[in-house]
Length: 409
Image (cartoon, helix red, strand yellow):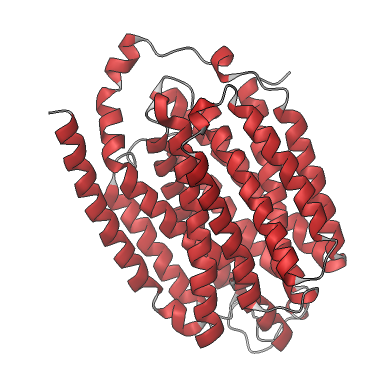
Protein backbone atom coordinates (compact mmCIF):
# COMPACT_ATOMS: atom_id res chain seq x y z
CA UNK A 1 0.00 0.00 0.00
CA UNK A 2 2.83 2.40 0.91
CA UNK A 3 6.25 2.40 -0.75
CA UNK A 4 9.37 1.73 1.38
CA UNK A 5 10.23 5.43 1.24
CA UNK A 6 6.79 6.40 2.51
CA UNK A 7 6.99 3.84 5.30
CA UNK A 8 10.35 5.28 6.31
CA UNK A 9 8.73 8.72 6.45
CA UNK A 10 6.14 7.34 8.90
CA UNK A 11 8.92 5.72 10.95
CA UNK A 12 10.60 9.10 11.31
CA UNK A 13 7.32 10.85 12.15
CA UNK A 14 6.35 8.40 14.91
CA UNK A 15 9.83 8.16 16.41
CA UNK A 16 10.42 11.88 16.60
CA UNK A 17 6.93 12.40 18.01
CA UNK A 18 7.98 10.02 20.80
CA UNK A 19 11.26 11.89 21.36
CA UNK A 20 9.46 15.25 21.37
CA UNK A 21 7.03 14.02 24.00
CA UNK A 22 9.97 12.80 26.09
CA UNK A 23 11.96 16.04 25.76
CA UNK A 24 8.91 18.17 26.55
CA UNK A 25 7.93 16.05 29.53
CA UNK A 26 11.34 15.68 31.17
CA UNK A 27 11.91 19.32 32.31
CA UNK A 28 8.48 19.38 33.98
CA UNK A 29 9.12 15.93 35.47
CA UNK A 30 12.28 17.43 36.97
CA UNK A 31 10.44 20.49 38.31
CA UNK A 32 7.35 18.74 39.68
CA UNK A 33 8.48 15.21 40.62
CA UNK A 34 12.21 15.53 41.39
CA UNK A 35 12.14 19.00 42.96
CA UNK A 36 14.73 20.42 40.58
CA UNK A 37 15.01 23.71 38.66
CA UNK A 38 16.53 24.94 35.39
CA UNK A 39 20.04 23.77 36.32
CA UNK A 40 18.92 20.17 36.93
CA UNK A 41 16.79 20.02 33.77
CA UNK A 42 19.74 21.52 31.88
CA UNK A 43 22.04 18.82 33.20
CA UNK A 44 19.54 16.12 32.24
CA UNK A 45 19.32 17.41 28.68
CA UNK A 46 23.02 18.19 28.50
CA UNK A 47 24.26 14.79 29.59
CA UNK A 48 21.71 13.13 27.31
CA UNK A 49 23.13 15.17 24.42
CA UNK A 50 26.72 14.43 25.45
CA UNK A 51 26.01 10.72 25.78
CA UNK A 52 24.39 10.72 22.34
CA UNK A 53 27.37 12.56 20.84
CA UNK A 54 30.01 10.32 22.41
CA UNK A 55 28.12 7.17 21.41
CA UNK A 56 27.84 8.45 17.84
CA UNK A 57 31.57 9.23 17.68
CA UNK A 58 32.43 5.74 18.96
CA UNK A 59 30.03 4.03 16.58
CA UNK A 60 31.19 6.06 13.56
CA UNK A 61 34.23 3.76 13.29
CA UNK A 62 32.15 0.57 13.17
CA UNK A 63 28.82 1.33 11.47
CA UNK A 64 30.16 0.83 7.94
CA UNK A 65 30.67 -2.85 8.77
CA UNK A 66 26.98 -3.44 9.51
CA UNK A 67 25.36 -6.01 7.24
CA UNK A 68 21.95 -4.34 7.62
CA UNK A 69 21.92 -0.84 9.10
CA UNK A 70 18.22 -1.15 9.96
CA UNK A 71 19.06 -3.86 12.51
CA UNK A 72 20.98 -1.18 14.43
CA UNK A 73 17.95 1.09 14.37
CA UNK A 74 15.60 -1.65 15.61
CA UNK A 75 17.93 -2.49 18.51
CA UNK A 76 18.20 1.17 19.51
CA UNK A 77 14.42 1.64 19.56
CA UNK A 78 13.95 -1.40 21.77
CA UNK A 79 16.61 -0.25 24.24
CA UNK A 80 15.16 3.27 24.33
CA UNK A 81 11.69 1.99 25.17
CA UNK A 82 12.91 -0.21 28.02
CA UNK A 83 15.06 2.52 29.58
CA UNK A 84 12.38 5.17 29.37
CA UNK A 85 9.90 2.92 31.16
CA UNK A 86 12.48 2.37 33.90
CA UNK A 87 12.66 6.12 34.67
CA UNK A 88 9.21 5.92 36.28
CA UNK A 89 10.51 3.50 38.92
CA UNK A 90 12.64 6.10 40.73
CA UNK A 91 12.51 9.61 42.19
CA UNK A 92 16.27 9.76 42.63
CA UNK A 93 17.64 12.48 40.30
CA UNK A 94 20.91 10.59 39.74
CA UNK A 95 19.12 7.40 38.71
CA UNK A 96 16.58 9.20 36.55
CA UNK A 97 19.28 11.31 34.90
CA UNK A 98 21.41 8.25 34.18
CA UNK A 99 18.50 6.33 32.67
CA UNK A 100 17.50 9.36 30.57
CA UNK A 101 21.07 9.73 29.30
CA UNK A 102 21.37 6.02 28.44
CA UNK A 103 18.03 6.16 26.63
CA UNK A 104 19.33 8.91 24.37
CA UNK A 105 22.63 7.08 23.90
CA UNK A 106 20.60 4.25 22.35
CA UNK A 107 19.29 6.70 19.74
CA UNK A 108 22.85 6.81 18.35
CA UNK A 109 22.03 3.38 16.91
CA UNK A 110 18.88 4.72 15.27
CA UNK A 111 19.09 8.09 13.57
CA UNK A 112 22.35 7.65 11.64
CA UNK A 113 20.99 4.36 10.28
CA UNK A 114 17.70 5.95 9.19
CA UNK A 115 19.48 8.86 7.49
CA UNK A 116 21.95 6.51 5.81
CA UNK A 117 19.12 4.32 4.46
CA UNK A 118 17.12 7.23 3.06
CA UNK A 119 20.33 8.72 1.63
CA UNK A 120 21.35 5.60 -0.29
CA UNK A 121 19.95 6.80 -3.62
CA UNK A 122 22.90 7.23 -6.04
CA UNK A 123 21.34 10.25 -7.77
CA UNK A 124 22.03 13.50 -5.82
CA UNK A 125 18.76 15.17 -6.87
CA UNK A 126 16.63 12.14 -5.98
CA UNK A 127 18.55 11.80 -2.73
CA UNK A 128 17.91 15.45 -1.93
CA UNK A 129 14.16 15.08 -2.50
CA UNK A 130 13.88 11.87 -0.45
CA UNK A 131 16.00 13.37 2.32
CA UNK A 132 13.87 16.50 2.23
CA UNK A 133 10.61 14.62 2.64
CA UNK A 134 12.08 12.41 5.37
CA UNK A 135 13.23 15.48 7.28
CA UNK A 136 9.81 17.06 6.84
CA UNK A 137 8.19 13.88 8.20
CA UNK A 138 10.30 13.60 11.35
CA UNK A 139 10.11 17.33 12.02
CA UNK A 140 6.31 17.18 11.79
CA UNK A 141 6.50 14.40 14.37
CA UNK A 142 8.69 16.66 16.48
CA UNK A 143 6.03 19.37 16.08
CA UNK A 144 3.11 17.12 16.97
CA UNK A 145 4.80 15.57 20.01
CA UNK A 146 4.79 18.69 22.22
CA UNK A 147 1.13 19.39 21.42
CA UNK A 148 0.37 15.90 22.71
CA UNK A 149 2.78 16.11 25.63
CA UNK A 150 1.68 19.47 27.07
CA UNK A 151 -1.91 18.50 28.00
CA UNK A 152 -0.82 14.99 29.07
CA UNK A 153 1.76 16.44 31.47
CA UNK A 154 -0.78 18.86 32.93
CA UNK A 155 -3.27 15.99 33.45
CA UNK A 156 -0.77 13.44 34.81
CA UNK A 157 2.94 13.11 34.10
CA UNK A 158 2.65 9.31 33.70
CA UNK A 159 0.48 9.69 30.59
CA UNK A 160 3.36 11.30 28.70
CA UNK A 161 5.58 8.29 29.47
CA UNK A 162 2.89 5.93 28.14
CA UNK A 163 2.69 8.01 24.95
CA UNK A 164 6.48 7.74 24.45
CA UNK A 165 6.37 3.95 24.73
CA UNK A 166 3.41 3.50 22.38
CA UNK A 167 4.82 5.83 19.72
CA UNK A 168 8.28 4.22 19.81
CA UNK A 169 6.89 0.69 19.55
CA UNK A 170 4.67 1.71 16.62
CA UNK A 171 7.72 3.13 14.85
CA UNK A 172 9.69 -0.06 15.53
CA UNK A 173 6.97 -2.31 14.09
CA UNK A 174 6.85 -0.22 10.92
CA UNK A 175 10.64 -0.23 10.63
CA UNK A 176 10.66 -4.04 10.56
CA UNK A 177 8.71 -3.97 7.27
CA UNK A 178 11.46 -2.11 5.36
CA UNK A 179 13.80 -3.86 2.87
CA UNK A 180 17.60 -3.90 2.95
CA UNK A 181 19.05 -0.79 1.29
CA UNK A 182 20.93 -2.88 -1.33
CA UNK A 183 17.69 -4.50 -2.47
CA UNK A 184 15.80 -1.21 -2.67
CA UNK A 185 18.35 1.18 -4.22
CA UNK A 186 20.25 0.71 -7.46
CA UNK A 187 24.03 1.09 -7.57
CA UNK A 188 25.47 4.28 -9.03
CA UNK A 189 26.39 4.08 -12.72
CA UNK A 190 29.63 5.47 -14.14
CA UNK A 191 27.63 8.28 -15.75
CA UNK A 192 26.12 9.25 -12.39
CA UNK A 193 29.50 9.16 -10.68
CA UNK A 194 31.01 11.43 -13.35
CA UNK A 195 28.05 13.83 -13.30
CA UNK A 196 28.15 14.39 -9.56
CA UNK A 197 31.92 14.71 -9.22
CA UNK A 198 31.91 18.51 -8.82
CA UNK A 199 29.03 18.32 -6.34
CA UNK A 200 30.82 15.74 -4.23
CA UNK A 201 34.04 17.77 -4.11
CA UNK A 202 32.21 20.90 -2.96
CA UNK A 203 30.32 18.87 -0.35
CA UNK A 204 33.63 17.53 0.93
CA UNK A 205 35.00 21.06 1.24
CA UNK A 206 31.96 22.31 3.18
CA UNK A 207 31.53 19.23 5.38
CA UNK A 208 33.46 20.11 8.56
CA UNK A 209 32.26 23.73 8.51
CA UNK A 210 28.67 22.49 8.24
CA UNK A 211 29.21 20.09 11.14
CA UNK A 212 30.34 23.06 13.24
CA UNK A 213 27.19 24.95 12.18
CA UNK A 214 25.08 21.97 13.23
CA UNK A 215 26.75 21.99 16.64
CA UNK A 216 26.01 25.74 16.90
CA UNK A 217 22.29 25.60 16.14
CA UNK A 218 21.82 22.53 18.30
CA UNK A 219 23.43 24.35 21.20
CA UNK A 220 20.57 26.80 20.84
CA UNK A 221 18.13 23.91 20.57
CA UNK A 222 19.42 22.43 23.82
CA UNK A 223 18.99 25.80 25.51
CA UNK A 224 15.47 26.18 24.10
CA UNK A 225 14.26 22.69 25.01
CA UNK A 226 15.95 22.05 28.34
CA UNK A 227 16.41 25.47 29.95
CA UNK A 228 13.81 27.86 28.51
CA UNK A 229 10.84 25.83 29.87
CA UNK A 230 11.78 27.20 33.30
CA UNK A 231 11.39 30.75 31.97
CA UNK A 232 7.88 29.92 30.78
CA UNK A 233 7.08 28.16 34.06
CA UNK A 234 8.24 31.19 36.08
CA UNK A 235 6.31 33.69 33.95
CA UNK A 236 3.11 31.65 34.23
CA UNK A 237 3.52 31.17 37.99
CA UNK A 238 4.15 34.90 38.61
CA UNK A 239 1.37 36.08 36.28
CA UNK A 240 3.81 37.99 34.03
CA UNK A 241 3.20 36.11 30.76
CA UNK A 242 1.30 38.19 28.19
CA UNK A 243 0.08 37.60 24.64
CA UNK A 244 1.61 40.92 23.52
CA UNK A 245 2.34 43.77 25.98
CA UNK A 246 -1.08 44.26 27.52
CA UNK A 247 -1.38 45.51 31.10
CA UNK A 248 -3.82 42.87 32.32
CA UNK A 249 -2.92 39.20 32.28
CA UNK A 250 -5.34 36.87 30.49
CA UNK A 251 -6.78 33.99 32.52
CA UNK A 252 -5.57 31.72 29.70
CA UNK A 253 -1.97 32.46 30.66
CA UNK A 254 -2.08 31.86 34.42
CA UNK A 255 -1.89 28.05 34.46
CA UNK A 256 -0.68 24.98 32.54
CA UNK A 257 2.87 26.11 31.79
CA UNK A 258 3.69 22.82 30.05
CA UNK A 259 0.94 23.43 27.51
CA UNK A 260 2.21 26.96 26.86
CA UNK A 261 5.74 25.71 26.27
CA UNK A 262 4.40 22.97 24.00
CA UNK A 263 3.18 25.73 21.66
CA UNK A 264 6.74 27.06 21.39
CA UNK A 265 8.13 23.57 20.81
CA UNK A 266 5.50 23.01 18.12
CA UNK A 267 6.38 26.22 16.29
CA UNK A 268 10.15 25.64 16.31
CA UNK A 269 9.86 22.23 14.68
CA UNK A 270 7.09 23.33 12.31
CA UNK A 271 9.44 26.07 11.09
CA UNK A 272 12.17 23.44 10.68
CA UNK A 273 9.76 21.35 8.61
CA UNK A 274 9.12 24.34 6.37
CA UNK A 275 12.86 24.83 5.93
CA UNK A 276 13.29 21.14 5.07
CA UNK A 277 10.49 21.33 2.51
CA UNK A 278 12.02 24.40 0.87
CA UNK A 279 15.55 22.96 0.89
CA UNK A 280 14.33 19.70 -0.64
CA UNK A 281 12.98 21.55 -3.67
CA UNK A 282 15.65 24.23 -4.18
CA UNK A 283 19.41 24.32 -4.72
CA UNK A 284 20.55 27.91 -4.03
CA UNK A 285 21.42 27.04 -0.40
CA UNK A 286 23.72 24.24 -1.54
CA UNK A 287 27.40 25.04 -0.82
CA UNK A 288 26.33 28.59 0.14
CA UNK A 289 28.15 29.50 3.35
CA UNK A 290 26.78 33.07 3.43
CA UNK A 291 23.20 31.84 3.67
CA UNK A 292 23.95 29.49 6.57
CA UNK A 293 25.85 32.27 8.36
CA UNK A 294 22.92 34.65 7.96
CA UNK A 295 20.46 32.09 9.33
CA UNK A 296 22.62 31.49 12.39
CA UNK A 297 22.98 35.21 13.11
CA UNK A 298 19.21 35.58 12.86
CA UNK A 299 18.94 32.86 15.51
CA UNK A 300 21.31 34.79 17.75
CA UNK A 301 19.06 37.84 17.43
CA UNK A 302 16.00 35.74 18.25
CA UNK A 303 17.61 34.48 21.45
CA UNK A 304 18.66 37.99 22.45
CA UNK A 305 14.97 38.92 22.25
CA UNK A 306 13.87 35.84 24.22
CA UNK A 307 16.07 36.92 27.12
CA UNK A 308 13.84 39.83 28.12
CA UNK A 309 10.41 39.44 26.51
CA UNK A 310 7.26 38.40 28.38
CA UNK A 311 5.19 38.21 25.19
CA UNK A 312 4.03 34.74 24.18
CA UNK A 313 3.44 35.88 20.58
CA UNK A 314 6.95 37.34 20.49
CA UNK A 315 8.35 34.06 21.79
CA UNK A 316 6.48 32.16 19.07
CA UNK A 317 7.97 34.40 16.37
CA UNK A 318 11.49 34.06 17.82
CA UNK A 319 11.15 30.27 17.99
CA UNK A 320 9.95 30.27 14.35
CA UNK A 321 13.07 32.18 13.23
CA UNK A 322 15.32 29.84 15.14
CA UNK A 323 13.46 26.75 13.91
CA UNK A 324 13.84 27.76 10.25
CA UNK A 325 17.57 28.37 10.74
CA UNK A 326 18.04 25.07 12.54
CA UNK A 327 16.28 23.18 9.77
CA UNK A 328 18.30 24.81 6.98
CA UNK A 329 21.64 24.20 8.70
CA UNK A 330 20.85 20.58 9.54
CA UNK A 331 19.68 19.85 5.99
CA UNK A 332 22.87 21.26 4.47
CA UNK A 333 25.08 19.39 6.92
CA UNK A 334 23.26 16.11 6.30
CA UNK A 335 23.44 16.59 2.52
CA UNK A 336 27.20 17.00 2.65
CA UNK A 337 27.52 14.01 5.02
CA UNK A 338 25.66 11.71 2.60
CA UNK A 339 27.52 12.80 -0.55
CA UNK A 340 30.14 10.02 -0.37
CA UNK A 341 28.30 6.64 -0.57
CA UNK A 342 31.20 4.71 0.95
CA UNK A 343 31.27 6.94 4.05
CA UNK A 344 27.62 8.00 4.31
CA UNK A 345 26.73 5.95 7.42
CA UNK A 346 29.83 6.95 9.35
CA UNK A 347 29.48 10.60 8.39
CA UNK A 348 25.75 10.63 9.15
CA UNK A 349 26.76 9.29 12.57
CA UNK A 350 29.26 12.15 13.02
CA UNK A 351 26.60 14.63 11.95
CA UNK A 352 24.31 13.25 14.64
CA UNK A 353 27.21 13.50 17.09
CA UNK A 354 27.24 17.26 16.45
CA UNK A 355 23.52 17.33 17.24
CA UNK A 356 24.19 15.67 20.58
CA UNK A 357 27.26 17.76 21.36
CA UNK A 358 25.27 20.91 20.69
CA UNK A 359 22.59 19.72 23.08
CA UNK A 360 25.26 19.28 25.74
CA UNK A 361 26.74 22.75 25.24
CA UNK A 362 23.37 24.49 25.18
CA UNK A 363 21.95 22.63 28.14
CA UNK A 364 24.96 22.47 30.47
CA UNK A 365 26.90 25.64 29.68
CA UNK A 366 23.93 27.91 29.00
CA UNK A 367 21.86 26.26 31.72
CA UNK A 368 24.60 26.93 34.28
CA UNK A 369 24.94 30.53 33.09
CA UNK A 370 21.20 31.09 33.40
CA UNK A 371 21.20 29.52 36.85
CA UNK A 372 23.97 31.93 37.94
CA UNK A 373 23.00 35.19 36.17
CA UNK A 374 19.33 34.71 35.28
CA UNK A 375 17.91 34.59 31.78
CA UNK A 376 18.50 38.12 30.52
CA UNK A 377 22.28 38.49 30.75
CA UNK A 378 23.37 35.22 29.03
CA UNK A 379 20.79 35.74 26.29
CA UNK A 380 22.08 39.28 25.62
CA UNK A 381 25.47 37.83 24.69
CA UNK A 382 24.03 35.24 22.33
CA UNK A 383 24.65 37.23 19.09
CA UNK A 384 28.33 37.58 20.03
CA UNK A 385 28.60 33.85 20.72
CA UNK A 386 26.98 33.01 17.38
CA UNK A 387 29.24 35.44 15.49
CA UNK A 388 32.29 33.75 17.03
CA UNK A 389 30.97 30.36 15.92
CA UNK A 390 30.34 31.64 12.38
CA UNK A 391 33.91 32.98 12.13
CA UNK A 392 35.20 29.55 13.20
CA UNK A 393 33.06 27.93 10.51
CA UNK A 394 34.47 30.31 7.91
CA UNK A 395 37.99 29.26 8.90
CA UNK A 396 37.03 25.59 8.65
CA UNK A 397 35.56 26.20 5.19
CA UNK A 398 38.82 27.77 3.98
CA UNK A 399 40.72 24.78 5.36
CA UNK A 400 38.26 22.36 3.73
CA UNK A 401 38.62 24.01 0.34
CA UNK A 402 42.41 23.88 0.50
CA UNK A 403 42.41 20.26 1.63
CA UNK A 404 40.00 19.21 -1.15
CA UNK A 405 41.96 21.09 -3.80
CA UNK A 406 45.20 19.48 -2.68
CA UNK A 407 43.63 16.01 -2.73
CA UNK A 408 42.47 16.42 -6.36
CA UNK A 409 45.42 18.35 -7.77
